Image (cartoon, rainbow, N blue to C red):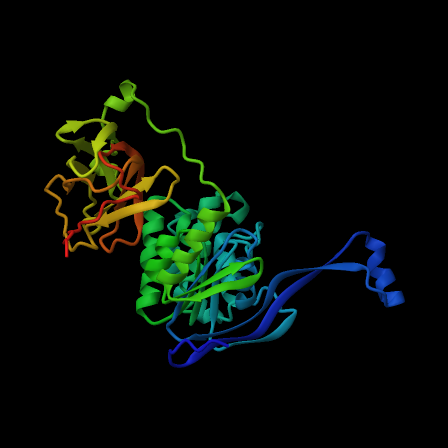
Length: 416
C-alpha cells in the first residue's frame, strides 16, 4: 500500500483486481457448473493493486491501449465491480468515461439531465438548481427538448461533460475528455477541470497526452498489461514511460519536406477572420537560418544562427496565448524544447488582436543529423494546446570534427 503523504484519504484500494472468464463454447459454462471442472480461460484485465489517494490529489494514469486504464477508472466510478480486493470511496464520484453512454436515446436532453443526475444521487430539487448551468455550459440550446438520438456525437459529448462537472462531485474521473470537442469547448472544458483542481477536488486523469498529465498531476500511475509498472512523481514516471514507448516500437515519421517549391516557401497557416475567431490561432511561422528563410535548411553545428518567428491571432475574450517550440530528432524523440511561459516571457497582442514573438538559437549546438521543428500555441498557463503546427522546418545539421552524440556542450580543457 502506498502512502501519498496527503491528508484525508478519499480512495482506498487494497488488492483490487478485475478478471473475466472466457468460454470456448456456450455449453462449457453449464458443464463447468454441473461437473465442477474448470472449462474457462481467465483474463486478468487488472492485476490486484493497492493504492491510497488523498483529498485534493490529482492522479494521472498512463499506459498503452489494453493496459487496464479504463478498467481501473470504471472500478473507481462504480460501473464495474472488482473480482478481488477491497475498494472504499469516501465522497460523490462523477466520471467522464464513455461520454453519453448512460443517455437514453429516445429521451430528450432535458429528461436525460434529470435521469443522469438521479443516477448520481441528486434530488430533483438539486438537479433543477443545476439545470440552467448545465444547459449554458453544454451550449446546445433548443436541442435540449429533442431526443438524444438526434444529437451529433459532439453534442452528446458536450451534454455529458456538462452534467458530469456540474453535480458537485468530490472525486472527478476523466478519461481522455480533454482531447475531444471543438476548440471553444475544449478550452472551456480545460478551464472547468482547472477549477476543480484549484477547488481541491480529487481527480483521476487518464490521457495519452503525456505533456498534460505531467503538467496537471501530483502523482502518476503507469499501467502495463494490467499491472502497475511504476508509480510516483510525474516527471520520473513520464520519462520512464516515454523511454518505454521509444524502445518498444520504431516511430515512423511522416515524409519530411523536400527541396521543392513548397519547401522554399514559409510555413504559413492562415487564420479565420477575427469576427469568426473563437480560440487563438497560429497565423504564420517563419524559420530563418543565417538570415535565409526556407523550410529545409543546411545548418552548421556550433555556427549557424536560427530564428523562429511565430505570428498569432488572439481572442478578445481570452488571455493572450503563449508559444512553445520543440525540436525533434529523426526518430521522433524530443531533443529540446522551449516555451514563453517556462522562460517568463509575457506575450502581447495589438488592437487587431495579432501578436508575434521570435526565439533565437545562436551557435546552434546540435551535432550532425536531421531535425524537425514544431510550434505550439498554448493557453496563458502553457497547459492547454490550441494548435500544433508540425514540421515547420527541417534542419540538416553538418559538423566539422568527430564529436559524437546529439549536442556539443560548453567545456574547457586544462593541461595539468
